[in-house]
Length: 115
Image 1 (spheres, rainbow, N blue to C red):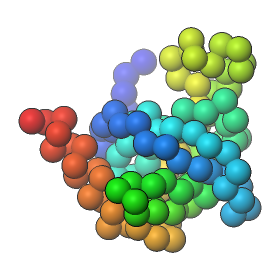
Image 2 (image 1 turned 135 degrees about the horizontal axis):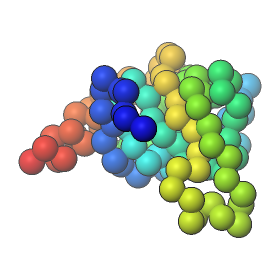
Image 3 (image 1 turned 180 degrees about the horizontal axis):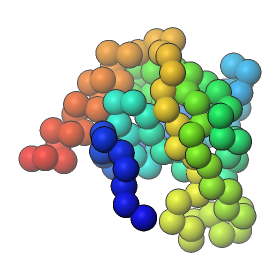
Image 4 (image 1 turned 120 degrees about the vertical axis):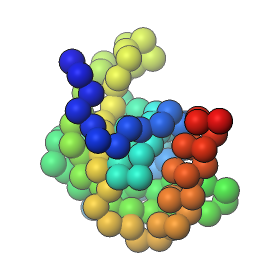
C-alpha cells in the first residue's frame, strides 16, 4: 500500500494523555508526528470519526488540542507490543493551548531528522 499523505510524519515518541468528553484518563505515546496530526500508539483505541482531547507535555509546556480519529487498529492486549501499528491516527481540529509549542516541536523534529 502506498503512502498517500502530502505531509510526511516524523518519528517521535512523546508521552500523552487522551480521552473523550474532556476527560484525560488514558495514557499513551506518539509514534509519529506532523503539523496536522499524529499516530497514537495505544491498546485503547476510539472508533473512527470520534473527537478526542489530547494533552502532551513538551519541555514542561502543556499542549492541549482536540483531534478527530481518522483510522484505528485494535490489537489484543497480549499482542500489543508485537504488533506493528496498534493504535489510531488522528487529525488535529483545534488547539486549546500550546499551538506555538506544538509547531516548535514539529520544526525541531524535522530539523533533527534532516541533519
